Length: 302
Image 1 (tube, rainbow, N blue to C red):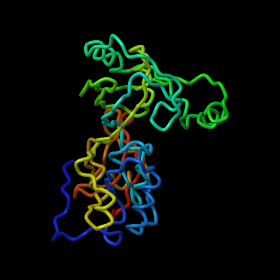
Image 2: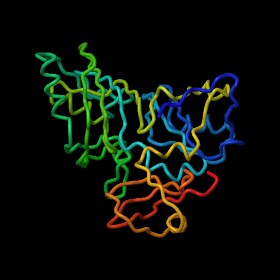
Image 3: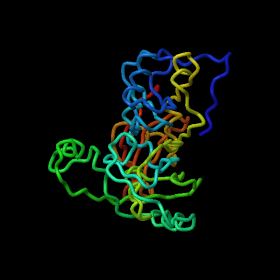
Image 4: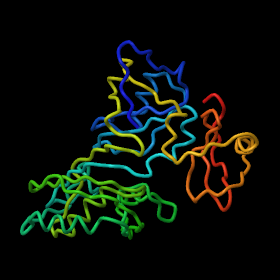
């Protein structure tokens, strides 16, 4: 989706004319996602807004700000995300990022670029990944990071994750710069840690920049200063959803979907963006056996 910044003579979008939509924020390094969200909410006088996909304070890049009824559709964004990561070899921290305490330093030796590429290739595709110790994952109802702060020894749970693409961008010891396209659930801090272990020297995630959250990219994002100065554009909800395959319905089928009922037809399994014959948004629906079932209905006038 190619969304251009508004020109100086275009009408600025304000909460008074677009109440439901997505604002693309280029979050700066050194600021938490919730802090960034609160700044935007105050600047635009928003009553209801949330962010999609937390970025740690040390990270920068694309953060989705979902406004009004768009918050209901948060789960449908970010099936794939793209990042540029800088990994520091030879040092491990307890958090696997620059905010933690150094717990180990090792000599970096016998690591050439071909070995690095060979190791990176191991992480392409599906594999089991241990979550970071400092994470919000729960064990027996307790957050891992809370257990870590108490010094508890725990077995880190593993999850099946998928990295669709991994590419070495720069090799300047002790740093590696990589680009990754990941599916939901991948921890980049764990990836940096595991790459360091495979190379035999340890590592942590030194810098991180998110450059896309499907279907949006950093090129179309606005800085906090842009937003404070009124130089921004909110993507209306009806334009922010069509990254799914679209289905056009008419007549009784539209009425049924709007009222939460299944319609008959053959739709391969997956998520669909449903429109009426005039192109108006109707719902986000799921293809099921011989039918289409609404998951989130989009109210008329959105």
